[in-house]
Image 1 (cartoon, rainbow, N blue to C red):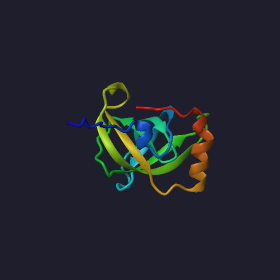
Image 2: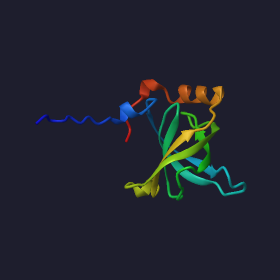
Image 3: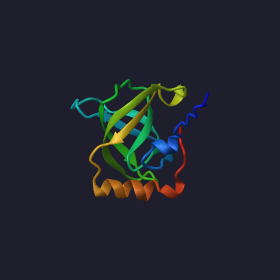
Length: 128
């Protein structure tokens, strides 16, 4: 009887871009509800394709967001648009009850430069 070897993909093999850990508190708002109040979230990591955030705001996969992300020095923000691609309950409740993966939508050159200038791949790490 022949044994079958099963190989699992690691997080780094699944990801299309390296992640940089970047802990910061920032503002979010639901895109599809104009006038919806802004809520606080915590940026956990960022890449050229998206971010991981923690928040106490319950959201479903597919939720569209406006995200005001701070630069490294905390002097200015730039707004990004994203879509929640996964959602989980968060074990670290003090940073928010839920963990979300958010994929960026239609990044401009200015947004791409903002990410590469403030969250360089030289600082990239494997984040959870």
